[in-house]
Image (tube, rainbow, N blue to C red; front, top):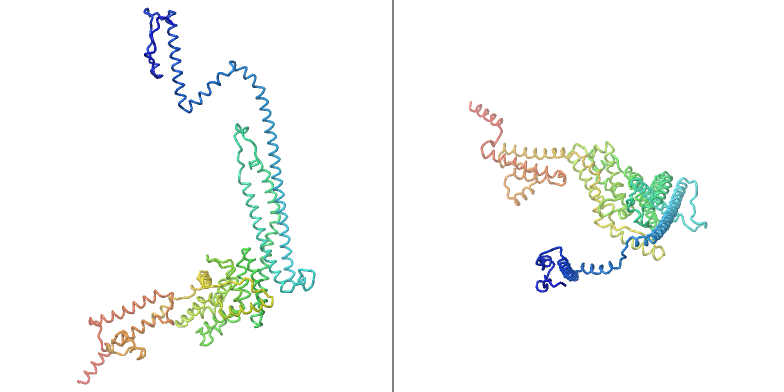
Length: 617
């Protein structure tokens, strides 16, 4: 170092910023910046500052996590060759080989993925082929069941034995198995319809959903093919779906025809079974518990089969047509309607309706309870409602369809007859569900006794399903009766406002007659039309003194008698009662104000005056 250098230790900066602010020292007195000593001195100063700044930077880097990473990079940079171009030339062949190797692997992977997708398509195609074979087999089997049913009903073939050995199955067992096969045919038909709808939905989804673009062209080389990628196999799977759909579309006409034929066979079988039940009931022939149980089982198979196909209305119509209408036609006539009274009074209506309900319960009570137990839900809806659509609807239709019966019941022109008819029908409707579905305790005990006897003989038919109809189930059935549209139409047939006008006219006439007599004979006139005992009872209980108030009170009571009052007219009867009381108050007020002259009419007064003048003369 030159002798002109100034000491640096005392003024050494302690930070980078302070080091940057250290002023330059020029020991040369001449301040010659181009002289060699000055330049050497300046170089030494810069080296010293560089060393200090490097030391300070290292300390700061060592105290931070990112700085520590940079410190590790520093030594590796010193190992780089001085000539990068030579490094690139050396690595180019290696990188080319790696790229070729990666390209070959990618091609092999794409080939394997393609093969895997073809395998998946083949597996799916095999599954669809098996499904199609099963569908066709089910279709052929169901058609065979229906063919045998038609032959049985047409009588073209004797009842086919289920086994080649004669006597292995009884005729009742064959009938029961045949009803079971019809229900299985309904299940098969429902399954085929669902397959057809599902296939149509899948084809619609395939044709309406466009294929999603895979990746951008620039990034496509970075994405490896995979079996999990559905885009690659979608074309093959879609082709299989379309192929299955074409197969099912060819079978669609047969499936639709199978649905119609199955419903017809079930309805025909149900009708024949109901005819057997009705015939046994009409002939009063005792039927064994086993036979009755088998009939209920077969009827249940038919009802469930129709419910599966959504043809519950067909079952209800068949029950109404075959089971209920013959009972109604045999009992409903104008002669029986007027039985026990004059013509037009409909005195036998209540007994006629009660007879119909009892007969239906006696013949078809077990069928109705079985249907209620099978199809009733807590929500209120039913697939097959035999109580409402099978019993009530035909009864209401029969009463409305015949013009003579309709006129006699709904428009008799006599208030008492109309009220009696309405009460009879309203009572019949309100108690219909309980009449048809309830079962007495004695019947339950008798069934338990029969079950024990059958079990001892090896007959386990008591283990068959038996519905439990409680009060809640009966109440739900009654609510369905009231909610049906036929019930609303039935209530519209009654001309109740006219009935009220007739009744209110009777009440007003009775009260006016009493007031006119009071006006003629005075307040103590005996205008009470009731008995002396009734008058005494009213006087003792209410403290009334005048007969005219007895008559008013008795008139008000008569408005609410069971033979007069109708529930839908409650508001009108209340209004009429208030009007009658108001009429009495107005009469009393007019009498107190002198507006009414008591003791006789004007005509009688003038006659009395004329006779008095004649006597004086």
